[in-house]
Amino acid sequence: MYFARAFVFREANLYVGYFDEFGHNGLYVGRHDARYKTHPVFGLGGFIIPADNVRELSGAFRYIKESGLKEEIDVKVRAQGKRVEQWEKKGSALLTTRNIEQYRETRRIVNRVISLLGRLGAQVVFYGQEKPRGGPDGVLETNAHRYDHVMKQLIKRIHWDLPDGENLLMILDKQGDRERLEIFAGAAAFMFSNEDATRLIEPPMEVESHLYQTVQCADWICALLGRIAAYKFDPDFEEFQWAPKYFGSRLSAVTSNSSKLRGLGKESKDVYPEHLGSFTTCYDPSRIPASKSSLEALRDKYSQN
Image 1 (cartoon, rainbow, N blue to C red):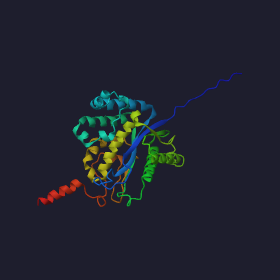
Image 2: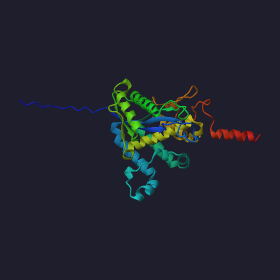
Image 3: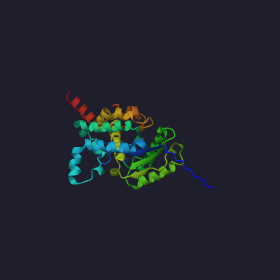
Image 4: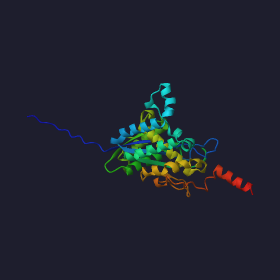
């Protein structure tokens, strides 16, 4: 007797998340400190997107990047015989005060990317935290502990924001440092021990960003989050007011409700998606000195009297 065997394949309900770092994971005293002057916040952010839409996002982001930055590509890539498809424009280099305020096209490019994410059903997700200020003798929190906490908070927030029945594959830009690999190992253990991490189907993985348009897109989003966070948590970064002004409301519209920047101290305020377009700052004025420009304004005011 012949028996026919039938196999039924069920399409997986899958989202893919692309993430990168924003701010800086290291000691911070202030923007004008001689040594520790990088960024007041450290976080991880990016977006989750239905797997069926990943290919379309990749192609559309590449088109926006290459059409919007054509002159730069012609000079730096094509004229030198390099491969355009592997050319990467870092978000930190794109999102400078000069580029945003002097070139409308830069603002248009970034807003097109944000709109693209919304059209393809992607959600921006992030978690970051204001860092304690001080040098190595005054700050007890280690970089490894901070990174581990931020990673686990991000995983939990993705879990909360995923539609029912959906699972996640999590991809980050490759950094290569040993400390980060240990964090990934911790995330592997976390996904099997915490009920808010059960939708992660594999531990986070790293890829080379110049080969992935999606990871480059996450880098741009993180650069924008970094500018907003700097403006919110340190008065010396008030030049980045353009970030909430031009992009905050649009970014808020495609950001998950669980995303958060956690303030430090009694008077510091947390930042939620609805605050991304606001000019309200969040630092504790009793703990953080006035900005350099504010002090200069006061000096000018009273020197005239």
